Length: 247
Image 1 (cartoon, helix red, strand yellow):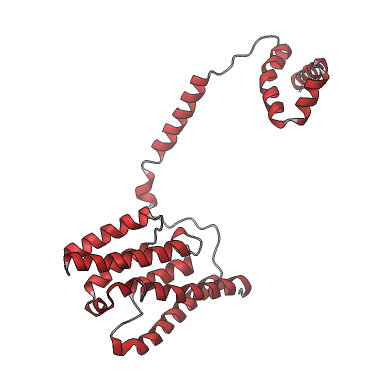
Image 2: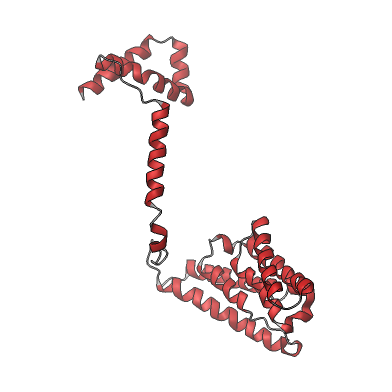
């Protein structure tokens, strides 16, 4: 405590010894104040302690930081394998409404898509495709994740579906078209910054479903992108219910 009071006294006396303009600049310029404190800290310590303190060199600081980084990174090497088999640490316990409303939204979404299937049955086209189930899970359970962004969803759905049509046209039905369609879809999502995992199954679905071949490039908009519009509406309803109807 006595050393702190003595250092403070030396600092105040040094400030009084500065010209008036310097004190004014020091008081009203935050950056200059920080620089001033760094510059005169060692002078104050030297006068209060009676000897010159040893500064830590920049090389030593860099090595210390690198050493700490190496230790931290090496300690994380063994963790990913075990952590992948453990549940993610939850920051809160979900309430009954947090569980019920997304589940009810998924039920309503598939029910509406099923009703649309009855209307489209004469054409042999179905709206209840597997990728829309995955989209429903992403939108209702993790609405703040990057995969749930509207740009990512629609860009990936439309682009990957079109890639599936093109892959079938170039390679015909078979393993080569599926492999090429999936690889091209991954490259497309990376290039457009529109990562949306459910869309990666759109090319494979088109190639393996003979009933969808009649849609040709219309498959880029239907049923994937069209179904996503319905799911976005249901997501907004579920979000409103979760925020306003809690139990």
